[in-house]
Length: 180
Image (cartoon, rainbow, N blue to C red):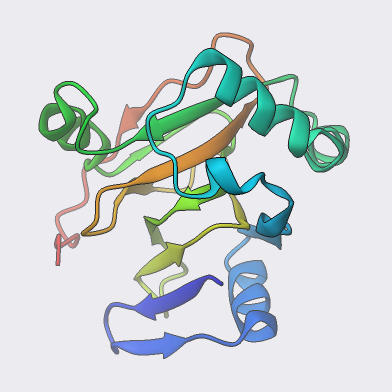
């Protein structure tokens, strides 16, 4: 279940309804899919074959198509990251820069854990959204954010896009942002 940490107060929000309400107030979509639908052999698998990826997409096809229909997403894929991912440190450095997109950035976590750091309203500032299996988040276009992995550095997620070639990150310079 998702958990939020508001950086300027260190307040934590853990209750699903409170998480959903907080994110809604920040214009961020949050949903929760049933992660137990995923076959057991894929629930902790972070190195995936094309067949594994197809099985994940098939397992969550109804949820993906429902979300895509409601939000206008046209294409989707699977991203799997772990210590076995070639050049993972360099890849994470690219991810760990505050940026925006001209479309939503969507992740539906099917295994592992990840974290979005998002710039909220002026009274909130930056906040972290820690995500686990079943958590679905959509950060709206033009909202400054970045996504990275938790300490165990393992995640599998469905990504949904409006543009068939995917989104492009646009750097967002913010002198008030601090990594920790």
